[in-house]
Image (cartoon, rainbow, N blue to C red; front, side, top):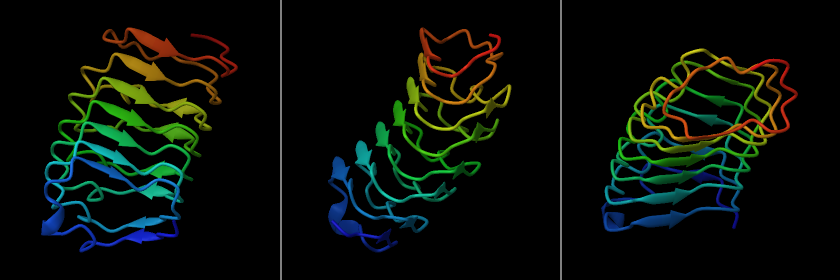
Length: 171
């Protein structure tokens, strides 16, 4: 497909019953704020293999029932504060194969139900100390194949942590 942008009116009131939306393998580089606001029953959104560079605050507004978000194989370099704040039901995020270099304390605000987070195959060098704090139920964290030199974050709820292929100097 050759879709390059998602505009505010692309998914209007005729799409409220959608539960799954597959927008993979396009050329999407822009998602306007509130583009998904009428997709109130959406549970799964696949945006992998596109050209997204940034995630912004109002991008996912209205997706209160979203459980699974797939953003692999984009060109993400930055996730703005509050990008995920409206995703109160989200349990899984896949952010593999992007260009992220750091995770800030505010990156994952609002993800109280998140169980699974994969940041594998990025270029992450640094995770701020409280970057996992906003995910009190997180049990699985995949940081495989990044550029981490140390991992000094204690997080008691994790049951699975993948730090393979990072070049860690201390843990």
